[in-house]
Length: 446
View 1 (cartoon, rainbow, N blue to C red):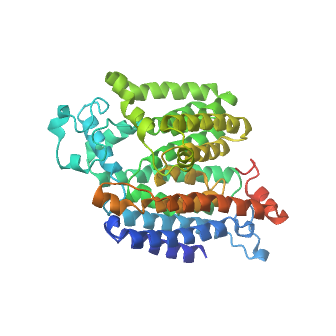
View 2: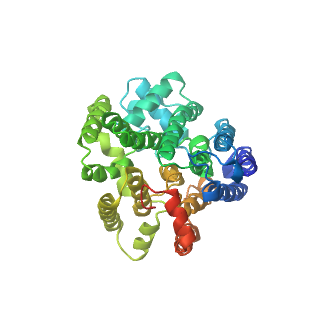
View 3: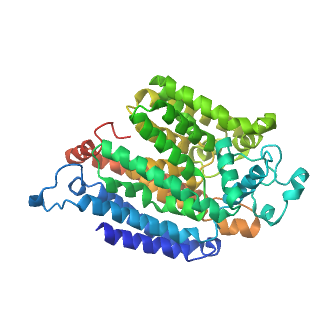
């Protein structure tokens, strides 16, 4: 069954990769994406069925279990995942221009130029103005990417300053992420092939290997940190956690949980590494956070609660303040209630998705990375529905105006809430409760 579903899924993803410029084939792209996501959801349901969980116990020939069944299932998952990723490595990024900004920043860092000091269009960077500048979005805004991301950009650009090199560089980091996930699954006695809840998610493949978004890098260091936390390797866990934060700041949401757990050595290690990663760029002074400040003040896209509050007549600053306060309150509540760091992480990232005024599809990659540990029907559905936010992309490139119709928001968030409600209703049945208890015994399902 896994091989059958995996073959269908790989065929759908390869078909998307073969379309070329996805802006010219958006309808076909989204139709294939929907089909791929339906196959992925079916595989996720199959993989988490209790009778199909090849748990870490002696196989029973009487029940038709083969000693190599679990291993074979895992290799099918890995093989299909590799095929899907390779299909996108040789395509041009057409859904987003972000990876070209990574190349730009990386080229500056490789030449010893502080990328925080000037926006790309600044005349001070005239020696670097070439065809790459025309491929950047927001070239009048200084970089928003944190120091660890900049160091990674510079390391890759010093070898090969091309967008494909940046996407190829994701392979070893994602391999480390898979190993950390398999370790966490094994500690819980869960099926190794549950890795497919992350590895087979079409959104992860398209956004990471099609568009090259760095959220996969951040997710890799975050999951590695979570695995190290469980082995009580506080210094190494802190270093990995700091690197995740310094690639993208959102893992900072986990800090209150770590304080509550009194992980002082981990937090001290994280602080020290964060300072070391920032030192090469301190010469930018107040400009170090200028790009991020612009993002926090002005960016908005596809935010459900943001749109609702704005429709009620609140001002933009008041809406952003209210959502920030709501996220802070949710973070404290989750940090007090969560039993494990992975459980806290998926809950905190989910709260962030709701509270953020800006929700691009690739923001769900870190959430998807934790789905093997916490299968959640609503989040699985939402990771497919959010692809609809690409619908206005062709019109944007033709006219320069980005207008996200309200019906897309209704389908995305309505589908999320309906799936959550259906899962809750079905979950009230004794059989479903037993399944949840069998799947995740170390923590209440998030």
